[in-house]
Amino acid sequence: MVRKRNLLFYLVQNRPFLLMILPAVLFFILFSYLPMAGIIVAFKNFRFDRGIFGSDWNGINNFRFLFLSGQIWNIFKNTFFYNVAFIVTGTVIQVGVAVLLSELSSKFMSRFSQSLMFLPYFISWVIVGAFFYNLFNFDYGLVNAVLKALGLDPVDVYSSPGMWKYILVFFNNWKWIGYGSVLYLGAILSIDEEMYEAADIDGANVFQKIFRITLPNIVPTVIIMVLLQVGNVFRGDFGMFYQLVGNNGNLYDATDIIDTYVFRALSQMGDIPMSSAAACVQSVMCFLTISVVNGIVRKFSKENALY
View 1: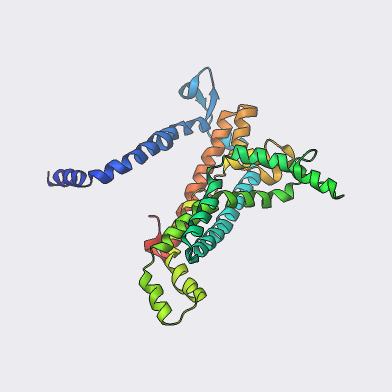
View 2: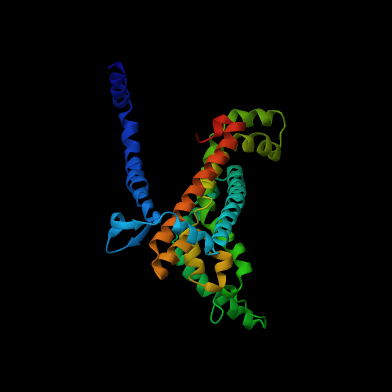
């Protein structure tokens, strides 16, 4: 009885915060937890006329076919290494930009730079993909037109798989540099000013203040941000990969990720069970990865772990 009163007291006392978090809770229940019931499709021989619950069970045959298809290693490798590259380069660039913005003495320049870098975050990958195609199209792209006018050989980007690891990393960083740097800039601005004043009195230069005060104080924020990204290390940005690369078979070996593979399985082959099996494996791998990395962080720094 006492426990119920305590719970009711807690709910009433914290009702503003609970109401604030309610939309997010409903969002995840409706769009993340309820759809998890559809995972049973991966274990069934799905037939449209029978529906999900009327279709026959087929055990792990969909998973066996997925692993024996010979494509699973390539799409998992691409998804993993692209995300690792995005996390490493993105974190370094975003932290570097945040530090530079914090050192700008002009508030106008600081806000102007933030707005300029934040702009790509609001641009759709559809527009970016169309813009990129018109720039680098082999026959009538602007870049190749300029190269031909200068007497140079045109570049066939859409037939050169090796170039795409640089292109995709560049565009991913271009898209997220403003969003990430603003988060890190907020962490920098929360550092106690008295630490910088004490450093000034001791005669520290700007680099000593950055490496002795700024960077050590934003390490917890960096760890949290990296952990959140590690949780999606086997989940690619479908919009970026599909809109930039398109359905180009010449680039599958270099750019095909789990999400584009699942989309292609659904749109071209109509194989719902196998695509569900691939998505199921993807979710399990993400869960295992974040659990292992969070466990490592928890072992060395318990207060910086997610749970």
